[in-house]
Image (cartoon, rainbow, N blue to C red; front, side, top):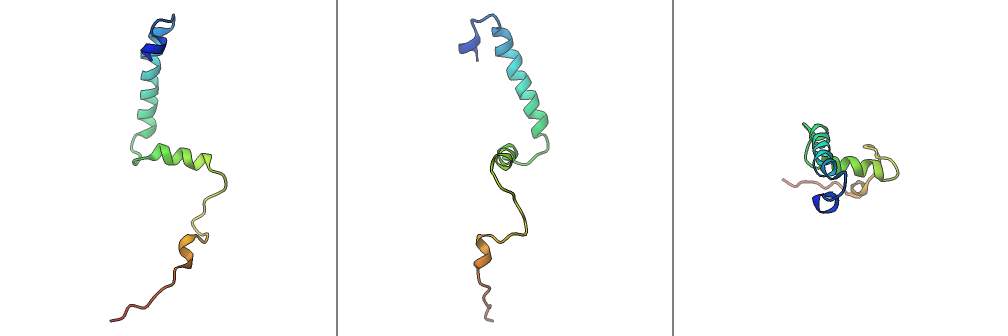
Length: 69
């Protein structure tokens, strides 16, 4: 940020204030969340369609076998 905005009139705000605000927002959003929460959250809202826990998926075609004792 300092390389790009350091010499401008708003350099102090862009170099110090904006990153601190972003860090504070990320700290409170990610608080008590699992790893990769933001990545999964963004993917969930970007991908088209819907997700359902009851639909048939790729593992539906697996056959159940007997376990021989």
